[in-house]
Amino acid sequence: MQNIPQIIVTAHCDKAARANNEDSCLVCADLSQSDSIYSGDGNPPYLSGMMDLGERGCLLVVADGMGGMNAGEVASRTAVESVSNFFSTQLENISGKTDEELLRKIEEAIQYADMSIKFDAEQNPEHSGMGTTIAILWLLRGNAYVGWCGDSRIYRFNTITRKLERLTHDHSLVQMVVDEGDITEADAFNHPKSNIIMRSLGDSAEKVKPETRKKAIPLHNGDVFLLCSDGLHGAIPDKPLTGKQPKKLSIESILVHASEVFAPSQLDKWNDLLWEAAEERWHDNVTSILCHVSHCGSDAETDVLTGTEKETDMEEQTTLTQTKMSEKSKPILKWLAIFAVLAVLATTLLFVVRGKIREKEIPNRQTELLDTSALQSASPGEDSLSQENAGSPSDNMGKGKQGKTTGGDFSTGKNDSHDESESNSNETNKDSI
Image (cartoon, rainbow, N blue to C red; front, side):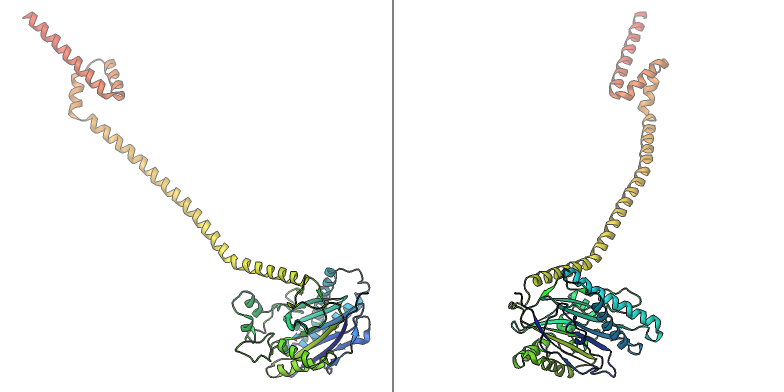
């Protein structure tokens, strides 16, 4: 017989360091029962009893509103109410749904909440500009399904491994800088630009872009899920910051201590320890939800991540690395393309210039050859030679053709003929005498 996980939930949502509270939260400990719903909008801290995980699961939501005078609290409240309405009407038959289809339901719930906020802003001009973050945890059939938009976070701590892991990835400017490797997670804590987020619900200029974990996360005995707004994780670092903060002031170390001194049935005391630590440094509204899981039938490994989770994290890390490499290589590829174009232009220009030079050189060489021929024809030897060999035009034409072909042979033959005729003339004269 399959074990039915048991859960206990506690929640606290308060204005904390601000004059008004723009945070909201929602606890549907059992989606099959409407009376198990708690909203953190101005209500005192909540603690459920230990209960079996229902057939439709447990739904936990945190939303951090933005807009100040532009009704940030309206945006966060609209978000959690819209998600609650969506899950109450869209889960008629989930028994045969795959993990991918269930994760898609979370995306659709966030999109529905975004449309509700935008519709409210259109109907009420005084609400124009409002927005909110959101983080959703859905526990169902022995798995956890996670979705978010903005910088509200979801963590998992395990009382056996005593390790904390963050299940969400902030959609913020500072997180982008961390991803690029320019600063560390320790540097990101309390960064002056940590309030700038890159995604949210209610942004009239963009369509909402929710994100989910790619696969379901198996539940283990001793799992404790924490959902919180940046009012909490902005006041307490995830892990101890060496040389910057005392070790006790980290979410992980506080939960380790809480698990040692309080039973799961006192989960609200765990939350109190987090709030006491945050109070020393908080500057915003604070919301936190804790959910303890037991009777799962399996324990977590010492490295927290197991099986599918390792594969999922490796895939996400690979995708992130490839994205970084792609972004970093874009300027290099751009300059390589520019260099290639310049090289082609330079080569083309070189050929054109060489062609022009050759065009100028050919007439010059022809002129030089003509000048040389003229000088040779005007030399004294050639003049006397022409006079001595005056004869019929046909003879001169033949000599001329031979001269162009073999000048040396023609000259030798010409001189021998002249000497022979001269000798014959002298002999005739002698006889006559």
